[in-house]
Image (cartoon, rainbow, N blue to C red):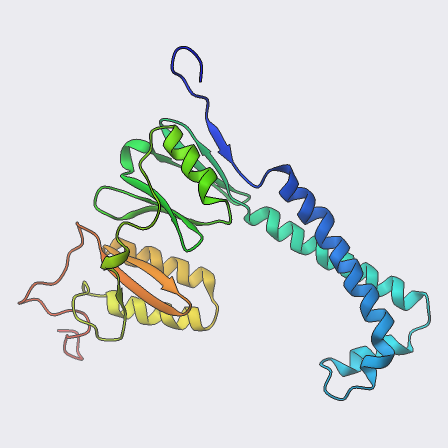
Length: 249
């Protein structure tokens, strides 16, 4: 910090070492796996329970050194693909006194400090909440909690060591009372999306539930929910979506 009190923005990321590990380590691991496969195809071909047995037998019949060179090349290519996916998904967090930028290869968004009440890391997600407890941002990350806490606290942000609303979450089960109208149907659809590993659909349904004031926390395939302060929760005389008549009345 300089004498005027200004502190330059802080960048939290995996750094160059993370890129080296991904772009060098994964291809090397792939090459090693390819070499090991080529060296053991004869033994693997004699095991009746080995998956892709026809492919293993085909590899075993290939002449050397073509078989080894081919499997090593495929392993390197697979490692490069994994490295590319990892690079695209890595989160870069840039914090200053006014805002935080959350960048990935396919997105770049900013959240203002004035709109944010608290920031925390929970279940490997960086979460920013507003004054009503609604999520302004939720990004998966493996960045160290200590570095994130130092960056946000150093620029005057409110940082919590865990979700301050964790005790407010309730396990969702179908037809559970207390949810805003329409939320039960969205949670059912999201449950199906999670079971089928349709992550894009699950994220979109999370956003739809957020519009109703429902905040989610996942544990495996189980969904936990809570309401924000501005959520329109049903009153005693107003049925929930799970309590309505079959015709929707």
